[in-house]
Length: 187
Image 1 (cartoon, helix red, strand yellow):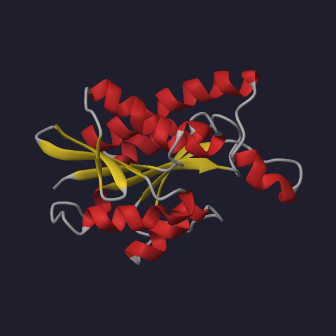
Image 2 (spheres, one colour; image 1 turned 90 degrees about the vertical axis):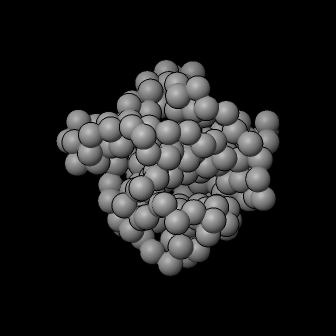
Image 3 (tube, rainbow, N blue to C red; image 1 turned 180 degrees about the horizontal axis):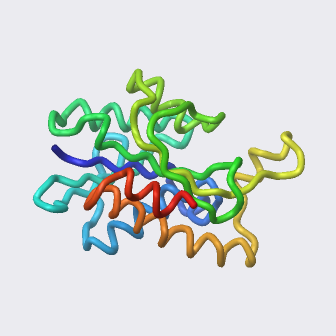
């Protein structure tokens, strides 16, 4: 069975370093570590390689965050070697402190529109969620500008460590087991 790791974000230079692009950033870092490169297809960027003799796909939707599920659905319809137990979605989370990561099986979107789009398009919540904390703004009305904003210098230091830990978490989940990854990285 193959593995699919989906990094959520928005395409384009304008969004590259924003809080909402952490999923893209982690998948880019993983691709770099595994010496994989991306190719553009339909409405996503895809990188295909192998890990432990299993196919490993890294996907970055080009549909913008709120329609991420369309890209994931388009990719999966061509693959019969991926089941929900081998799908990992990486994204920013307002409910976790800056830099904290958490791997979780199943669950709702927590209000994250990109995750909600995936749940709707795949008609399931059964996949792994790798959340990276970005904290939340003081007022709910500021959420959109906050997630589309850049990290402060202080936050950036925590985020750089979190991205490395997220890559290690994914590799541990795939090479050993998701349970082991949760035990190590969810602390």
